[in-house]
Amino acid sequence: MGVHLTMYNLVGWSAISRCWLKKYVKDFLRENRVVIRKKLGQSFLVDCRVARYVADFIEGGVVYEIGCGIGNLTFFLAEKAEYVLGVELDYRLAHYFRKKVGLENVDVINSDAILLRFNGPFDYVVSNVPYYISSDIIVKLCKDIDFKIGILTFQKEFAERLYAIPGTSSYGRISVIASLCFTVKPLMTIGSSAFFPRPKVNSKILFIEKKNIEKEIIEGVEKLTQKIFSYRKRKLSFALEKGLGLKKEEICFLGDLINRRIFTLSPEEILYIYKRLREKGLF
Image (cartoon, rainbow, N blue to C red; front, side):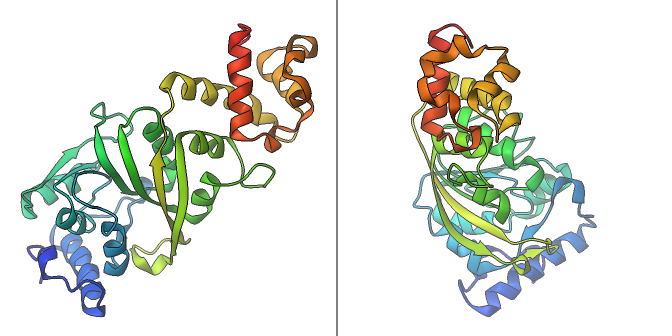
């Protein structure tokens, strides 16, 4: 088996295929003397049941895979998609993948997905997102990348923040941004044994569908939430005074909202607050 074995030898959901993918990853890393870089959050999916589950959402079209690594998920996506564009930050992985694993409908770019200016359009975005860039990826997908559907895997705790409801401990800035930009549906929780090296926490796969909202509005809401969520348990009037220097009499047009705690305000209410402040020339 080894690095030249392709996805077309897999047997879908069987234990044999699960062992194959784990062997592929370990063999690839060993044969190419690749040392895993923990600071990049590198962890490779090695459970074919999960890979097949993700790929089964793809129905043709163009897929953008963020962090394609050594192609362990890309093989599955390539079977379902017309074309896959993968982006990989680690030069070694991108180089070895292009050199040793040739798929006709796959291209790999060695770049930072956060900084990359080529932003679509894509039918799907797929990624096993490293924790340290999770928030940045959500903002990037929201503001810059033109796509329809995302199948994204995050650490479980972060994933649950994306669909947290107001008033809960998980609700915060990223919950607001995600709710305004996407319809978010949790799909399944994945145990740490599905990855190599094995992470310390479980992960969760999310289905996201992009909404039609102007980039300028999202950028404004993002800036507003940066100011007010530093005071998430204080009233809006307090947060606006501390964050924007606005006195209570200047924001009376917001009505009863000024007496609400920040973490109880819904995404729609925060959007309303942003629009009203902008109309009044206060933000």
